[in-house]
Amino acid sequence: MAAGDKPGRLPTWFLFLAPVAIWASTWHVILYQLASTVPALTSVGWRFALSALMLAGLARWQGVSLKLPRYAHGYMLGTGVIQYAGNYWAVYEAERLVPSGLVAVLFCLMVFMNALVAWLLWRQPVSRRFLIASSGAVLGVALIFWPELASTGARPNAALGLGLSFFAVVVAVIGGFFTLVLTRRGLPLVPVLAWSMGYGAAFLLGMSLALGHGLPFDGAWTYVGSLVYLAAFGSVIAFTLYYKLAERRGPAQAALIGVLVPVIALIVSAVLEGWQATPLAVGGMVLCLASLFVATRPQR
Image (cartoon, rainbow, N blue to C red; front, side):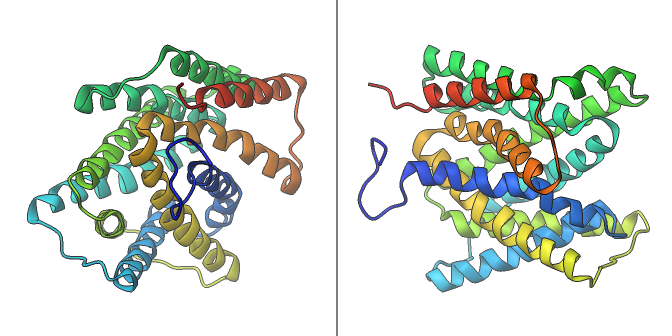
């Protein structure tokens, strides 16, 4: 049990590793969504609509009211539109234009962005050891995906893909802080997530209609099963644990989850999809894991 953990609540290591394992597995599960004829925009909308319903049910089961102050809905609407809609939509579109490895490396920058915003808003300190170790972890991820990164410039729409990726990172940071602002004011996390994901789903499904896609759905078991997994585990459970970690250890520490996810995702890919690691990738994994070990050690 990490320093600061108390009996009766989830240990910090679980709050960190559980979202890592879940989001790493979603890299593979999303392939079943992309294999469908349903547009990615609509699939993400269905995902967060189902997630919002699950969170609303969870809140009622916990005896927590879904009624929140009026001012909070502005934050939750913003979170839904920019984080759960804009972020995910931009990632899906970016990965059509640039290698997924580039997107993964750029998302590692959330560690430093979160640290900066947390310092600006709440004066949360960040140690030099944390910043150096986090930089080593990001470098490790870059080494893992180096062949993909090196080939990015040859793609015709690489600049657009890079812009979409960076946009996704920025709105993910902003949306995350909108949620933390509300929970730090004492609002319960589960209803906040339920409303935020509901607003995001409404925006995405509305865009699907506006773009002429309609609201198609695929009844194949692979599509339905992957949708339920992404909603229940990839959204409800993972985001709830992620924000609990951010509340306990700070947004910068929580963002280290995004650094470890690609490493575990590639291990899953090696098992299920036949991905073969190169010596450079293995070295990057070792550097990333060693750096994360140093970055997550509690301060003396």
